[in-house]
Length: 386
Image 1: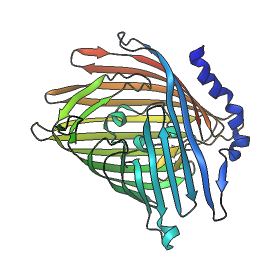
Image 2: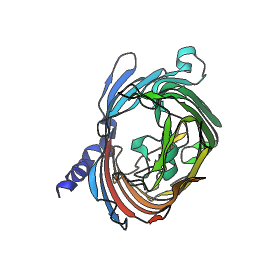
Image 3: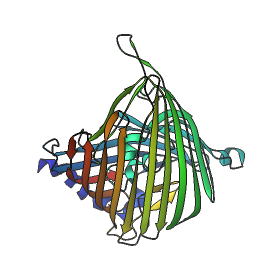
Image 4: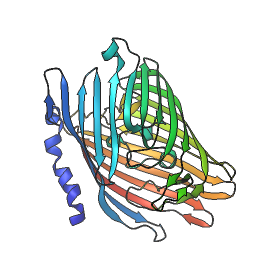
């Protein structure tokens, strides 16, 4: 029972964050010039139970996220965010965004400087509080580049949007090198509850060598792998192993989103090519398709080329049913990283605007060389966010 305590405490907090009080939380500090400041947070407690994993997986329950930060903004002019995940000891977004229309009177887009996510596809760019499933799909886990320090520009028009930037390493001092990224989407429909989004994206990364504590230079390397869409296990069923002396990494993505009232479909295809100096090129790819139905009639939110949690219409919150199929292939040439396909069924209960309860069932099927595993996972999450 002690393992269920954090889950129960977050659940019991539901009345305090239900819809009638949503506008009063989180507390904000407002200045006369329109500047607002507020704390932000995203806390998630997970329970994982495994079966048929050949004894490799261990049941677990723990905090998945303990994100805390601050947000300062002046509407139409700028916003600044800084947050840190105390569970993983990792900096999240730390960035200042400026709106050209507020500064010059004309809309030339929004500029952002700091640490941020690279514009590659949907799932990787979706905020952790807004994930419809408890974990990202296989290809997103393996191929998404993550956060980097850089400069980013975004321009949105009624029927399209463009996002591009240049980046370096991250705030932890890892991932040395340079990256360029761009994302272009056609959005012929993006009204409330009626959305059609079709996009392409790409990144080019040139990693740098690093020097270890002994003063020895280590050639750039990369490793492609993914968890079986389970939140707490450290195990990966597909894994390319470490590729050394990497000169360049190219990533590409195709994405689609359709929202019609309480129904939605979302899918992505992601591919990477690793170019090493002394070895043949290595490629891996994967894709997923996911569907969602909000039984209570709400719609998934869409803004700025990405999705967010639905806003509950009634006092009892919003209820969502989901399904996802994902695949990844890390076999290429002499490298047998393995292949995996997963089915995920999910249910979400959005209790007001700040509490989300999630349940996922994942059926994985992975083959890597002579190894064939088919683990099943039942996951529960209580997530409090503001």
